[in-house]
Amino acid sequence: MDPVSSLPSRSSARQGGAGKKGHSTAARKPSKKRKRKKRGFFHTVGRMLMVLILLVAIGEVWLYLTPSGNKMLYLMADTLITTQHRHWAKYLIGQAELDRRVAAYQRQFDEMGEEKDTHTIKPQPGAAEAGDKEAEKPKPLIEIEEVSGTGYRGYVVTVNDPTKIRLGVPAKRGKGEKVSSMVERTGAIAGINGGGFADPNWKGNGFKPIGVVISQGKLYYNGLDSKKSSTQIVGIDKQGKMVAGKYSLDELKDMGIQEAVTFQPRIIVNGKGQIKSQKEGWGIAPRTAMGQREDGAILFVVIDGRQPGYSIGASLYDVQQIMLDHGAVIAANLDGGSSTVLVTKGGEIANKPSSEYGERYLPTAFLVFEHPEQVDIPNIWEGLRPQDIDPGKK
Image (cartoon, rainbow, N blue to C red; front, side, top):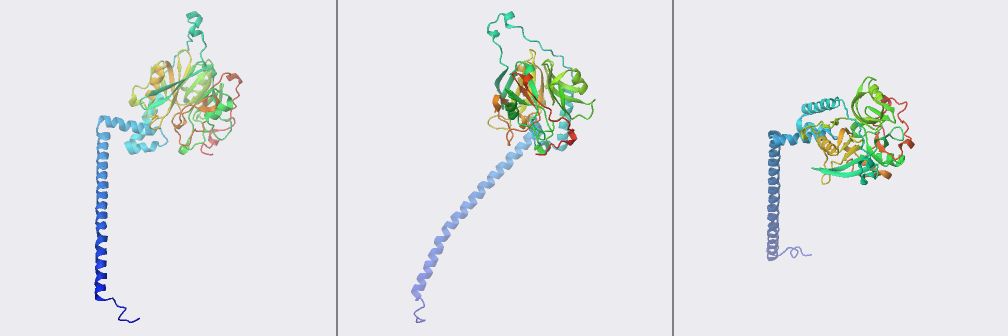
């Protein structure tokens, strides 16, 4: 190829240059638009952040510097105290206040267990005596009623014959059992979670109860330090009378306790509510409680929680008021939170347990039977010492 002919002419060179210049100009126009869009985006984000910071600041001022905000602050803290994440409450009220509040509640619960219970069971007069033919119809053994209030939904279970209740325990050593499994396995017509248990890192196996477990009049488990130690129990004696409060093992034996677990606090004693207001209600959470009417019927209150849009939960004050509204003359708190569960015949779960892992494995449950005398509930803790049980082993 001729080296001269291979060079572009001056006119073609100018055209090429003009073409490049035109191309460059066209390319810069969308670049300016993109810059404007970016500036607009960051400007919007910046304004949103400023609004968010302002709202947070206003919220903190309200929470910490106003009476209504302070009330909400401590309600939030108390709610956290009842969950698996108690330590989070320190970010709201500080570690010192958290420790003080937990200690104060414990003292209050102990005091609520000291008043002597004097209630007696007074069966209602027979229908024939009253002349009420409608009342001649026998009551069903259990009745289940839905209840609801501000922020909560749940159930009240009425067991019209308290002597039909037995305390169920797991079938095998080394691990708790789901209440639905207990009900299905034993043929019970209903089951409600019972006492608490050692729960390290909230991943416990449900096999190591707290305090004592009494089933069919026998001491199945004793986690107390000594024979003279007292514990807050919730249970029933041989006559079907509910017993709740602080007692020693000797006292429980003398009282003829038939079924019992350790838990607290009592919330109704001698027909009087022990919690004076929502402020003392120990936060909002799923709840389980047991009570008794003057006619002997046992009441179980089961409240769902930690499920926005369905049920956030209830305070102990809420549960107390539900019990009073249903005629309870004595009532006490049972294990709640993610343990709260109500099971009906065949192992059907009636409520909505809050645990993200589903129904929990538990050491005890109050079970209702048509014929409790036919039920065999072996003591799976026989021969085991509490110190030999690993509550975290799966």
